[in-house]
Amino acid sequence: MTDQTETAAATPSLFPAPPMAEQERMIEAILFASAEPMTVAELAARLPEGSDVPEALVHLRSRYAGRGVHLVRVGEGWAMRTAPDLGWLMHREQVETRRLSRAAIETLAIIAYHQPVTRAEIEEIRGVAVSRGTIDQLLELEWIRLGRRRMTPGRPVTFVVTDSFLDHFGLESARDLPGLKELRAAGLLDSRPMPGTPLPEDEETPQGQVGLFEEE
Image (cartoon, rainbow, N blue to C red; front, side, top):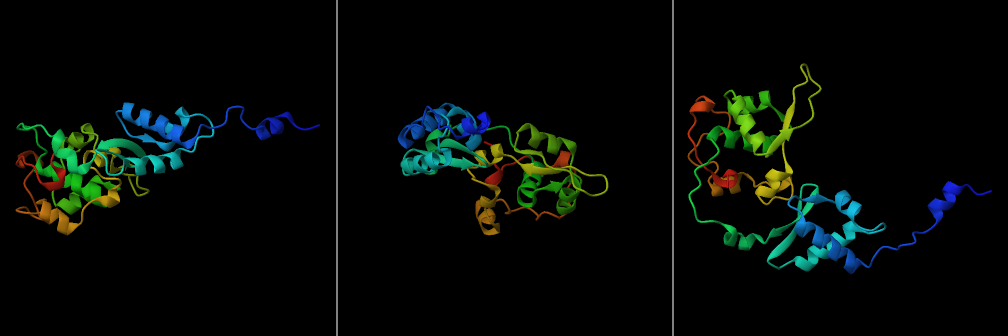
């Protein structure tokens, strides 16, 4: 007698997956309504059984190429975002009074380029102690998060950048961060000492905005 469990597993679904064009429409609707990027697993959980989410995303991304809205990958998730060349249409012409401190900018840059990195390693690169307020500010912005603990004495926690950081700066992954030449061209390294040069206490560092890490 055939095992009932095996028989049920071998039985095809009574409701076959919808056509690929319909799967695209479903994903399109979900992403437009979502405020945050969604992973393939999250999308698959909403679509009918048997849907091919990765394939549908490929087709949908191609269909939106060249349009005012693009389908972009943000870390492990996917989201609908304004085309980069049209971003200026979304900018409000007003003076932003809140800025990241120089300490926060440098700390964020070190985490982005050296992640996963411990607080001690950040301080070694900067050449100055990192105040708790600097780390707390970046955590509150949700641009960094706690990573895995190092398997070293004391098991210090590490810091890594988040998908919110990637999304804010229009990056698909941390591998897309600009190189040294691009940072100099953007002004991040102009008129300031390189990381590792002793700086004043964090609390006394001037406020400012620089290159990639301007807070909008």
